[in-house]
Length: 135
Image (cartoon, rainbow, N blue to C red; front, top):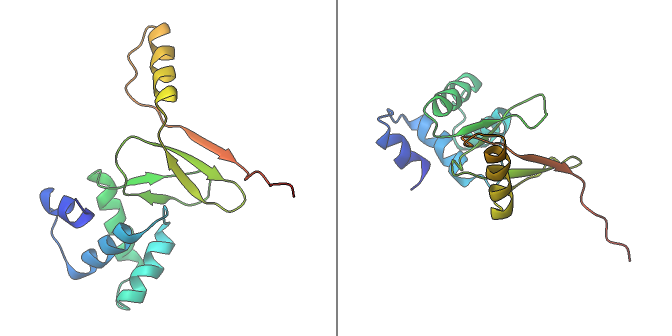
């Protein structure tokens, strides 16, 4: 189900500019910042303002249709993948790689259980540099 369909199910009013912002988010293969969403949306509709992008992203975040991420940067990025996953962030390029790993999930649950807790939430962000292959 795409983001526009999820918004409709949530009862969110669909304006033309919102549809463009949702299209930009749906087509993103990265975790775009507000500025990146704005630039991409503006290329599709020159009348879209930065304020409209900010309001729309904040609303989508409040409705839990996107997740605002702060990867130790001075700006937020937006993630439309609301399924449980983790991130590896390349500290040189800023590339964000999503991953899932059952061993990590089992280990987190075991740690919580050993400390007398049921795990309800965990965010894992790994930061690294790509290993240079020697020739």
